[in-house]
Amino acid sequence: MALLESGEMYLETIYVLSQKSNAVRAIDIGEEMGYSKPSVSRALGLLKDDGLIKKDEDGFIKLTKAGEIHAKQIYERHTVLSDLFISLGVDEKTATEDACRIEHYISDKTFQALKAHIEAFQSK
Image (tube, rainbow, N blue to C red):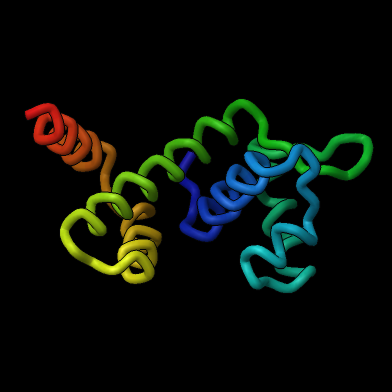
């Protein structure tokens, strides 16, 4: 299933928030992303329909197994790219912003090659 950039951003945000707290609410997601309640509600509905998130009996948002796998992949891309750009001398704010844009468009093949190159370079 191909998610749009916005869906990936929601999954990544839910993942990051869930690392800080087990109680992730729609309002937390909206505040973190700077989106309105209706926008968040619509996006969460789409992610739920795609089987990527679920709400528990208390209304807290949880990633499904598929959602967690996808979110971890996006988050890994974000962190690897951010770290790479910072190591090249890019300031943290710019590196993070650029990584955030690129993480949604880089192919799996290119990302894996980049990651392997970084690992090989670091082991020298």
